[in-house]
Amino acid sequence: MCIHALVLTLASVCAFGLVRERGATVQPSAVAASSNGFQGITPVNLLGTEHVTLRATGFEPSEITRPAGRFLLAVDNRAGIGELRFNLIREDGLLATNSLVENKKFRVRRVVDLLPGSYSLKVVDHPDWVCALNVTAP
Image (cartoon, rainbow, N blue to C red; front, side, top):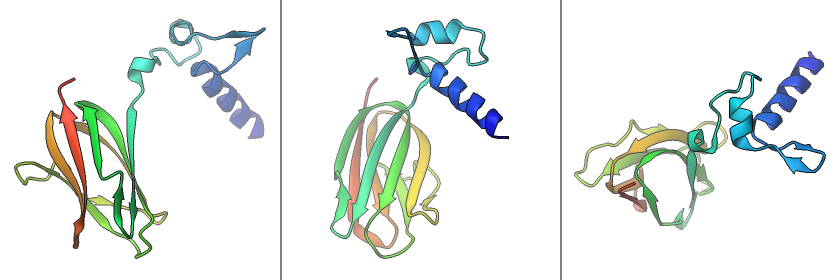
């Protein structure tokens, strides 16, 4: 069992170009073209991440600007008031995604795919806690 975990770990490290061969960094394009089972993994396939932290004073940062497309929205609850629900709302007032409910670790991770426009990340039952999300054309 341990050997399988080690092999998977080493394969993952190699796939992301983190292993050096006699001082040379493995290039992502070379890894993508190899026959190690990780074809197609290139920097283009990796998701960007937007990270916000909710504190008792509100979101940090309170505003984010990013290009349109898919990304990982990461929200950490450090407000100290228990589990919360979050809504991502478009400028027309409609929900951009289903409600985001944090897990037992007081965090939410969701891949979203947004078109250009203005959005608000809001905490249900706490209207003062808002993070503005400005999505620009790619």
